Image (tube, rainbow, N blue to C red; front, side):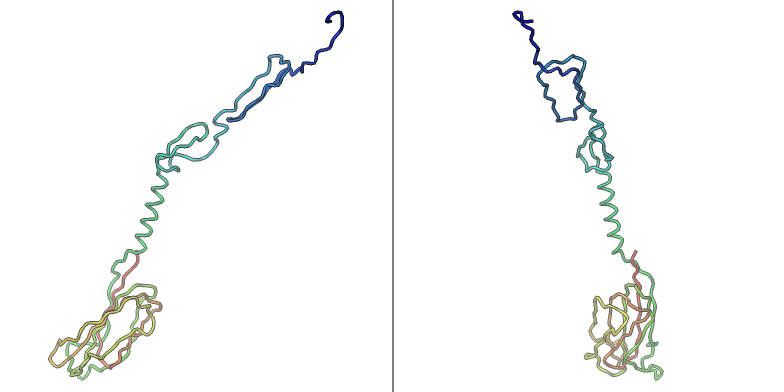
Length: 208
């Protein structure tokens, strides 16, 4: 009653107000009556930072909150990935000697009638290997300056070289050729522009 009159209040009756907030959220208190039994509760940091990262996963010195804990990266995974990639890349180009195979005529006696000249020779190799093929050509009393040699099949030639004319025996001229390449079959065919007696070797280079 007010001044003899019955009046009804207009204040909102909010009763018990309870709220749960995450970090960064806010709650505006409404105007009105509160009975004092409510409460505002903040969720735990762990519940708001749920993750699976570990210090190993983070670059060295980088920080992050994971499951309520602040962690500092040590770079282990980054370093391991780098080292693994480095070692894998290094291994892919590491070449080692895989053995040598000799072929061709016996040229210890270039004057021998048993040494017959040929212009083409097919030599057995192992497919899928890097090889160095060294070839010597000999022919008695023949000037070899204009001789050319090529690999016509079985090998992708990466590099090629030939030396100058030389006299290993009196009256006998020769020339040496070197091919480096990757074998695409189990045999390679070498061809010269003139008929010569041949000797040579195949050095196998394995990829480790």
